[in-house]
Image 1 (cartoon, rainbow, N blue to C red):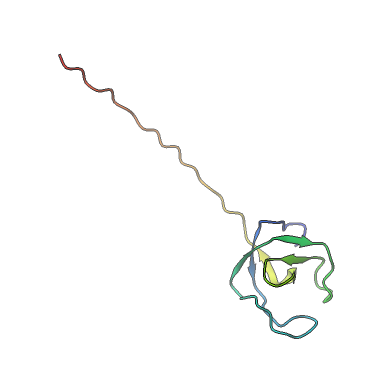
Image 2: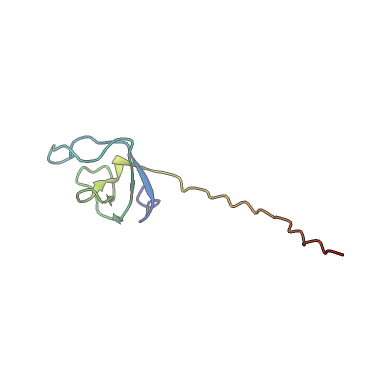
Length: 90
């Protein structure tokens, strides 16, 4: 996933299991979206990912805890309005 994720992307937390190494509870919430602050090309000690994501909660988390959300597609609708000229008085 690291090749597709970059700073500013939105990711969905899908795994809030305890920390891979220490077994401590993590402050992430399943179903919450987070904004990626940085992608660190560093293999997670668990061996399941090739990058850690900094989402602004504690330090950095294994990318396997997240799924990349699609970028929003903004629609801009062009509204054309006709302007009528004022009628002249005779």
